[in-house]
Length: 246
Image (cartoon, rainbow, N blue to C red; front, side, top):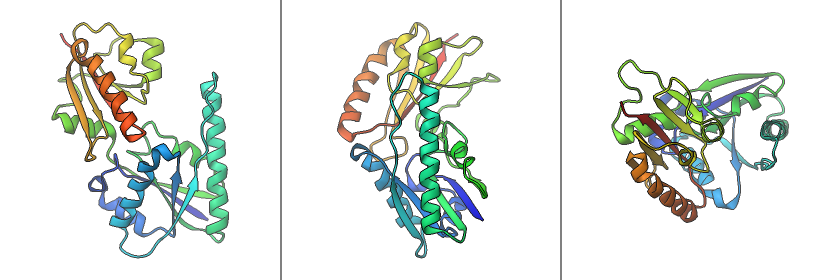
């Protein structure tokens, strides 16, 4: 039997890890670290740093190459195929390194429950007990960086993606939107009047970047800064909160 520990590690800052996360890492028989493209080598380095700082005794660490998601018109189909490929890789690593079972750990950005597919991929693994260790989300890191409340007094918040915002516009009956997974600055498609934005990239990291103000005034600057940061680092993770003013 395999116990798969999906450990939320926050936004890459080792200080974001909880005691439960550190304990789960140290209880693991194997930690798998995904390797992505060279442009995203920083992400692997951050996971290596977290392991170096949090492990109090030797734990086997294995790195593996992540498959790329196909860029095709059928987005959902491409994602499902990608998940199948990742699950196959996990099973191959388990068969190779934990043939008799044991505790496997995967370090998940943010929290495994929020816009992350690790739980769905884990569901494809047979004879596996899944354990989730929650982590600080990028939403929490964003509001902390700006020193703001996520919601207005007694008001709701809707969490969505850049793709959905771009395709469907501002949702009805929502005054506050958190937008994640937005590689194309979907806020450009909105009517910018009476909307404020709180934006953040690389939250919690030494090169954290944040901006806040009326969307009409600072939206273009965010687009420029985002492009420059992505070029400089080879990758970017960002998130933003939009709120309509009364």
